[in-house]
Amino acid sequence: MKGQRCLSVVLSIAIAAAAVVGANAQDDARRDGRELYLDFGCHQCHGFEGQGSQASPPNPRIAPTPYPFEAFAAFVRTPVRLMPPYSPNVMSDEQLRAIYDYVAAIPEPPGIDDIPALRDL
Picture (spheres, rainbow, N blue to C red):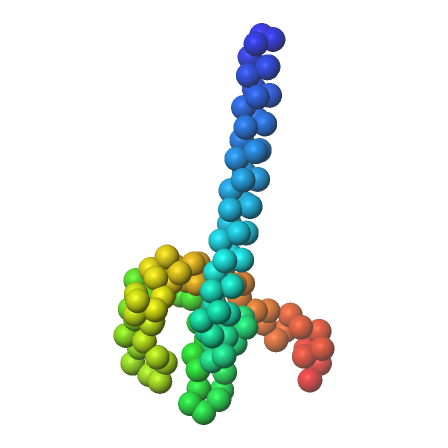
């Protein structure tokens, strides 16, 4: 009985430690993706939160992305609009994946009804 309790405590600690390590790894990956997003200048057209813009020509919203990685990568590698192509020689597949993971993790913005200052307009 005592051995089972001890094992249960050890397993609980191990699971909690793994969760913390996993959360830290996700935070690091998000931070790396954001840094690459800024370094490659993605924010200049797509905004700091991937919100896009109504500039001329308009730049599409890319966050949170509804596209699977393969579609996102195809567009980045061979865009059909004014965006420059980012070949693997310019942006590695790992860098592209980090940017995708960052953009995919950006939360959906609140709706107008959820912003008190805009609700009463």
